[in-house]
Figure 1 (cartoon, rainbow, N blue to C red):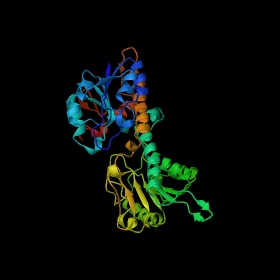
Figure 2 (cartoon, rainbow, N blue to C red):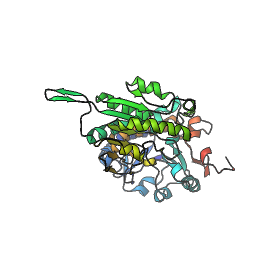
Figure 3 (cartoon, rainbow, N blue to C red):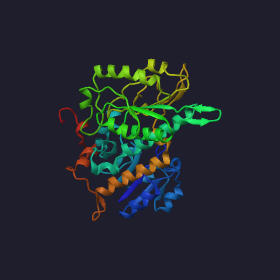
Figure 4 (cartoon, one colour):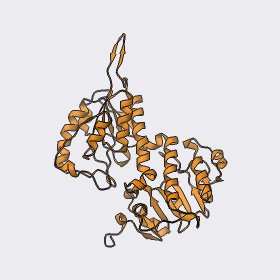
Length: 381
């Protein structure tokens, strides 16, 4: 079995889907590993590093994909790359299928068995292969580090002979994996931290990290979490109550870190333009939801700029890729765990039982057909 690792071509993508460590372990399963030349350059690994681990270095995507039964990628390969993937091959990547309605039917038509690892169910068995969690964890850390670099004053309280520098006040919106890591990192740097989340379980998680909880607590919040652990979209009445509380909280904080996402939907706008206008000059907004439109109304996806009233807004795309060595290392292990969990040692090939909960959660297409219930035509679903 040949496994191809592709070089990422998108402008904001610096990660790679394998590491020298995972190449060795994949080869131990009985596979031949082909890594496209330059695939690891932006993640700190040279072609020589992959070759030393036992990989074949392919000159381009077509050479890597020739005869490959398994393909590893970070982002979904583009149409030209997919055209070179053999029918019946297993493609493992982050699909972002909700953003492109034509993608899943195109994968089925091409005969590609596509596994979208961002669709993994939130169950114990899947934790070690959960790409959303591993990448969000690093994004939350990176958000605080970049906010500290952008902030013109210190993070911790500093007492000197010349006077005292007060601690930064950090407000984290969304206490999922990214938000909790942002809270922990900001606390380690000495900031006064508060956070909010609509999910009822988040309050105790926030407080356990030493931050104060800010939020509207009513009957709606008791049902604000899906069975899969994601936040639900809230009613207009709830959003109005939340907006009033957010306006007051945002205005008195130095740094606001936005992490709120709803699976398969545009990110909710929580920090409005009037809230930004009420912030002090020198304040910083970090928007981890920029790829999904942003939690801040003033976010410009892919840009960092200063507003007219002096607020710095960082709306970079693909925050995990801003810490590419660590992000690639964890992502590569996620993919290794997924494949090895379903690896048939005797056949030396993946075996993906259709009844398995993880398989049902991630498989978009199989055998030339759309199989994921969220992407089936309405009449078939």
